[in-house]
Image: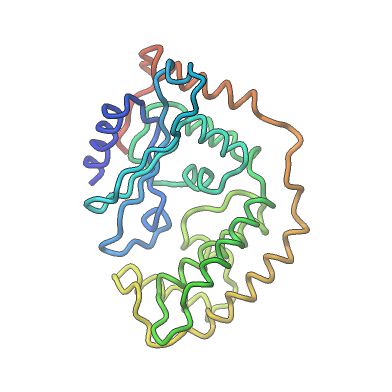
Length: 269
């Protein structure tokens, strides 16, 4: 499958006249609980030829492919990605945390990872994960057959929020790590492990009844996260970082279009 994904990156480069900087896994496989039939959720950052940027017209900054043969592929243009990185966009922050890297052709992600602690905004990110958990709560986990996937889709942002509240840093993607570090109640932890086991065996929807300890854990945790927001740092940082990100954009443009840099090689990991 990795080879198939890399071939898709080559096809995108040829079709859209771009260079793919990096491509990573961003879904359940990155979180550590894929089902046997889970899609591959591939997210990538790409850069156009230099002349593409020499235009007064606004142009599309996203490339998306229809889901096909288990591949869910979408990417952001480099300037868009860096603008969102500057805003501490949670999606970009999660991509950088992914340990499943399918494709890498520049120094972009290495340099972004070095900048990440400075650009990460705990308060804004915590607000995002609280809203995600609340939004996913509106989906049904209260019926006669509460969905395993629905539980996990609520628990993941809750635990990501707990990590931010505790450490004020970007949360790891590994759901198992979040559970082990942040769930103190042994009964809740045991039930979450049960959910993970069922999910990874392909039982995504069927539960005959709610798991009461986890159902009670959810609103209590959301309330605690909301209380913790005020104790976090302000929304904005003192330094702007626009100059540094502009230089990173130009560096990647030079790496991929202006010179054959032997120290930067396309890798299949």
